[in-house]
Length: 360
Image (cartoon, rainbow, N blue to C red; front, side, top):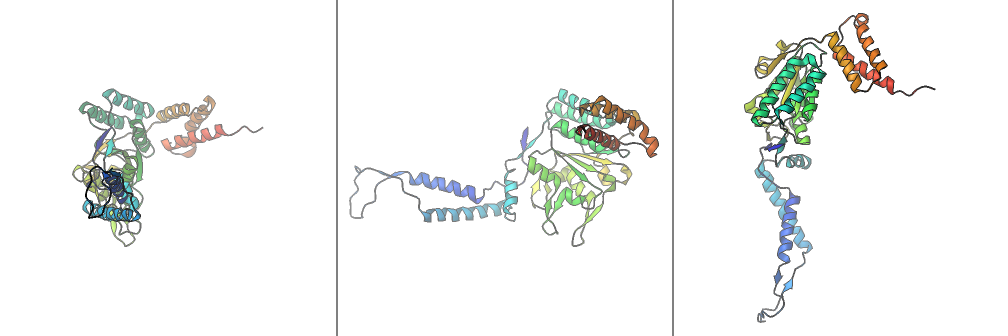
């Protein structure tokens, strides 16, 4: 792991830490040996024994506490965090010393990640190849896990989001999903400032503050169906505009959060976006992303995925065979193509049935 500066805030301390520091200094000074007190008319006598320590009174404690509060207020005002509540300030304090970047270990490690991805989802080969080359390039340069924002465009139900979650799992980095088709998706992405009905921080920032990893995988589903949100006072909020500020290198490195009203370095996030029709995605977003066109999944690939996943889930051979038979007959019964979602539901159903207790 490599540590980087994450929030653009000068160092500051809260009143509790300042008070502890001042009290420690006061105790050290009071513990110094000194001459005993004497009247003004008495002569000094160096032969008298030194008196060690002076007790700290209640008034001393009050003065220190008051001074610590004043110093904390001045530091907070200088750092630009005086508007934050106590719990919000505590969250920012945890990242003042920076956050970690998950690194690419070696080129061999990058090969292993790509091999695992391809073994699980071979039809996602173009996406896996793109991630593979990005990881190998980062390994050669000694850089962190990083790749240009990518749009996975392809038919629904082929596992684009599943692939992205597997990528995060194999990279051992945190991940979060945002559904762009929902009306409030833009708010989930960037957050809401305090002038709105419900103020909150965006999910990417929340994830980084919670896990202290600067390069998580953020999955944006249904990018082609992104909507425009509206606040309680009628103000509009475009998802595309919110996304642009986070994927554009120049702005993401000093991105200003509308909730905390502070600048954060969001430029290390790994963005994986999915779409069924990329032509509906604004050109301003498309031009800043790597577009990967994916083919539809075939029945043979669905069956192979079901068999492999069934074995990983430790389903019985009979259970796996039953699922494969269902997948073979279902398209004729349903009158439509099967998707990866159908396969996953069948596997979960099979697992649930096998875990049921035997009826005596």
